[in-house]
Image: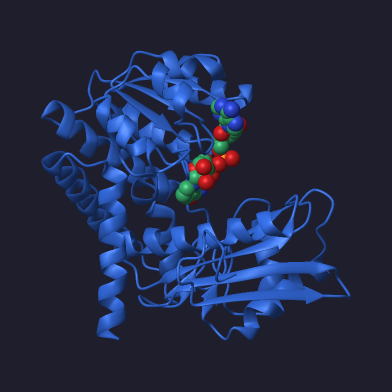
Length: 349
Ligand code: NAD
């Protein structure tokens, strides 16, 4: 582990095996400098244990940065369960996972991620209190997507302000990839603000529903990269900004909620050289984790969520401004600020 290329001074790596249920999982605690480590639990059929380790090391570091930028009192962690989410789930497995989380005594809070849904969270909750993302109970925060989408919409306005001197989106064209939970709500905000929408998805029903509500124009999934628009908003998949798509993009800004948009961090520099202003994904999509943080605090408050989201958008603006003033990629500036916030909290403690 200490020699692994993705090892980044993680505080703790905890591997669990439960013979009775077949559970194999790793919980990575990257940093608790800002508070207990928090991040979702992913269930994935990794080809190798090495692939699983790489994923959890990177994802937990990413959560430290995301939580630091969101200004919430949480550090970064992540859990991965090795297995097929379609065929490998059982209540016993998630209860065993819950006991693994409980054994860390609050150093790590878990939540939903790819392959794990709200009913799995409820099963874990039978064994541990250190679970968020529930839709029932006193402090339950429910679906985080509307908060994520509001942040994405406000973030798009910040990008527009730097590009066009105004955050008025009336008459602007926004190309939206993915109109699921986050993309769908984001489109509603954008349409209300008077933006012209060009949307794509692989789910025809979702597309039709959003087009009907917003008057959006629909294009085929592969055509979204060629749309001439003011801003491209990715809200579906990761690694969609790569060498091939970069050459096709015909926009001035990229601002969307999808995680891990850049195939490699260096893509941030290539976007900059092409004159495209990029809102770093883990900053603009921090609304969801702010919602989860409200639940972890034990007393969910809508006002606190709104105020913390507003501060996150100010932080995003500062990242964009520093990047533009110093001719740096926006994602490098965000990483530096996140690392500084974590280091400063560590020193204070
Ligand atoms: P979702 O599953 O509700 O929506 C994703 C949509 O993308 C679906 O409608 C799906 O059909 C579509 N899609 C899949 N492949 C596609 C393709 N090739 N081309 C076009 N569309 C495609 O998921 P979501 O919760 O809206 O999350 C969207 C993204 O935002 C993910 O990357 C997620 O990790 C990220 N994110 C979500 C939240 C949240 O609060 N839900 C928070 C932070 C980040």
